[in-house]
Every structure is written in C-alpha cells, then in structure tokens.
Amino acid sequence: MDRNSFERARWIQICIVAIFLMIIYKTLDNFSQITTAVSRFFWVISPLFYGILFAYFLYTPHQKIEKIYGGSKTKFLSTRARGLSTLTIFFLLMLVIVLISSFILPVVVASANELVNSIPSYRDLILHSLDNVPEDSIWYSINIADTVRDSFTGLMNEYTSPDRIEKVARGIISFTGEVMRILLGLVMSLYILMEREKLIASIKRLVAALFKNERVRAGMSKYLNQVNQVLFTFIASKGLDSIINLVTVTSILLILNVPYAFLLGLIAGLFNFIPYLGSLIAVILISVMTLITGGVGKAIQVVIPLLIFQQLDGNFIEPRIMKSSLKISPILVIIAVVVGGAYFGIIGMFLAVPIVAIIKQVLNEYVSSHESE
Image 1 (cartoon, rainbow, N blue to C red):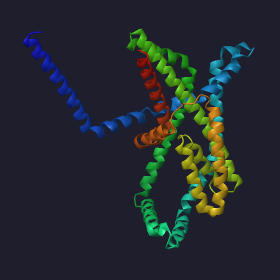
Image 2: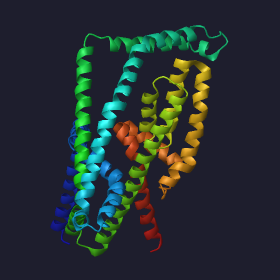
Image 3: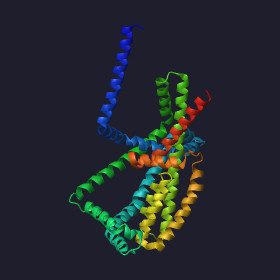
Image 4: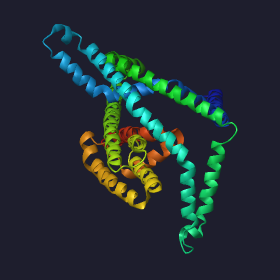
C-alpha cells in the first residue's frame, strides 16, 4: 500500500469513528425525546401486543375446538373447521365479557368505590393505633405515626385538590382507551389464530430474504421457534394459573367473609402474572387490608389458607400447567422482574421472564457451539 492510500484509509477510519461518536452524543443528548418517541410507538401498536398475548392464550382451546369440528362426519363442519372454531371462540369470549360486565364488574366497582369512601375512617383507625404504640417499641423510636400521617395528608391533598375533576376525567379517558385497545387486541387475536399458517409463512419468507446464508437462515428459524415455544409456555400457562388464583383466592375470601373479596381476588389474579414476587405481594396486600378491616384474628385466618394455597400452586398446580419449565434461577427472575418493572411498568415485569429465558437459551447455545469448535 502506497503512502496516499494509507493516508486515505486512515482518514476514512477517523471519519467513521467521528461519525459514530457524534451519533452516540446526539443519542444521549436527546435521550428523553428518543424514549418518548419509543414509548409513543409502543403505545400505538399496543393492540398488536395484546392480540399476540391473547392469541397465545387462546391457541390451545382454539386448536381443540378445531379438531372437534375437523373430526365431524358432516362435510360442512369438517371443511370449515378453522373458521367455525374461530367463530366459536368469538361467541365464547362475548359470553364471558357479557357475564363479567353484568355480574362481576359491578361488584368490583362497588367494592372499589366503598374502599375509596372508607379511606378516611381507615386512616383514623391506623393513626389511632400508631399513636398508642408503646414508647419502647421500634415503631415509636422511628416516629412511624408522623410519617404515616404525612403520607395520608399528601394523598388526601392530592385527592381533594382543585383540579381533581380534571384528573378523574383524564383517568376515565385513559382507562376507556386502554379497554378499547384490549378489545381491539382480542379481535386481532382471532385474526392471528385464523391466519396463523399464512403469518408463519410470511415470517419464513422474510427470514429467507434477509439471510441468504443457509446456515444463518437455519439458525434464525431455530431461534424463532424457540422464542415461540417460550412465549407460548409462559403466557398460556401463566394466564390459566392466574385465573385459578383469581377464583381460588376470591372463594377463600368469600368463605371467610372478608370485605372487598372480589376486588382483592382480582388483585391476586393480576399480580400472579408477575413471577415469584407477584403472589407474595398479593398475599401481603390482602393481609394488610384484612388486618385493617377485620383485625389481627381475621388477618391470621386469611393468611394461613392463602399461604397454603400459594405453596400448592407454586409446587404442584403451576408446574403441572407449565409442563416444560423455563429453567431460570429465582435470583435471575427477581432481577429481571425488578429491572423490567423499573423501565416498563407492569408489562415489563410480566414480559421480563420470557425475554430473559430467550436470551439465556440463545447465549447457552452460542457458548456451546463455540466450545465444541
């Protein structure tokens, strides 16, 4: 290489490095704008995410119903098994939505409204108990009563602020929009189930177009199949287990005559989507609410059956539902849930585990392939 060529190559490298550094600088300088744009993008396509989640959850019943129609001796049914299965799932979903809207939702809303209206009396009860703790208690030494009083004051000021009507209106609009996106996701999930072979074929064609190398293409197809299996295992099994948690916890609370049983049962079902920490948080919340509303005796009556059920669920029910374990260390799961929740909220806490499972699987195969070389 002559001197001029060497100089040109050196300056090209310097320019590339400079451009790369400028890109990094501008990215960090406008990080908040970038994160806002990314968040907005994910908000816009959130119905698609809901559709994919619902499709994974509905895949098993959809497939079983399709087999029933496909095995029918009536030609009309057997030749239209896929469409009839989708239609059946649609009507079942509509039935569930109507039942929830007519019987369960009004009870939950009434419980939530009653709880909100009872906050002042519960506040006074808690503060009275804290004001009368013994002087040699650790709660007295850290001045817990004043801390709780200040927290309640802040919450009540927020609740009774002049712009509370505007905040309530914004909350109602946000909630209504989220419900509409969930319903749109349900509709999209039916189309995904209906056209799943075409979607898979399109993804395979895209992989083939992007990766010309046969080995790379085979590896990408393998990883995509693994991603699909991990997501199906986690979402479908966790969804079913959460429904079991919701029904069981609500039944326990109703039997023990605990106030706000339906609302607390719903909380247990939703928090169960968060691995490891979710069930524990739900038990703590339910125990605290029962302690406030029913006293120590009632709280003990609730905690014991809840802990027994959580042990049965964690060691027997959920492993039977999730037949193929994701095989992730509990410490790694907790770290993933905390990080996912810090950056992406509840959805991040829910999706953290399957994402970590996918990354772990890919890294293990990458390391194994290089160790064998």
